[in-house]
Image 1 (tube, rainbow, N blue to C red):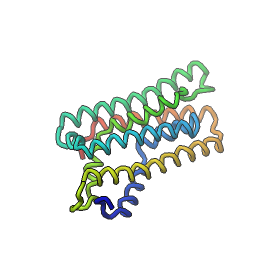
Image 2: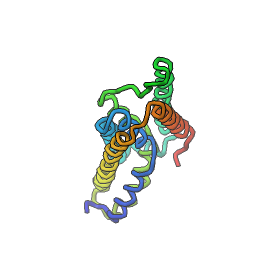
Image 3: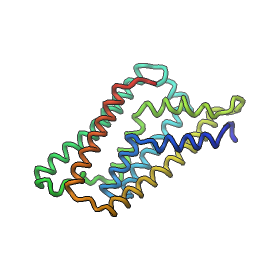
Image 4: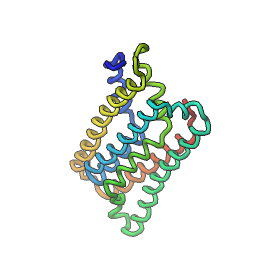
Length: 214
């Protein structure tokens, strides 16, 4: 179909890759747990929009620049790492300020507008060069060698991957919000959970900054 091949295998592999935990899923779960499923969905939509940028970049050949240029890859990588570190540090510092102001009784993440949460999801995804390299390395394996329009086939596969990813991300948003309501975690546990999540974002940022192309 439209120059693709082994579509079932592609869908299964894509679903498994989407389920794998990372900064995107952590961001969705964090926002759903603190502000409800709509906030988690806003983060998911931002992530999906970022993925669309990577898909179009791969189709236009721009992602090849990241794969071949060490300078371009490093610049985008460090920008993405800096943003992940910023998110993590913001969470950690806001927790500390809240604890001092409220004697650690009512600490929680700052409430953000859905627009800001959308941009968090977008930037977390679009500033990760690993996603761009992924679309260059993974998706072409499912494009038929005799495809008449390979860029179009890549876009089709990328949109299928993103659609399945959005289904998973929104499921994650809703299920996290539901679990949070059912568990009724107290403020002290929420405080330490948010600190732990902040540390995870810091670790993701450090890992990305130290990583290579492969």
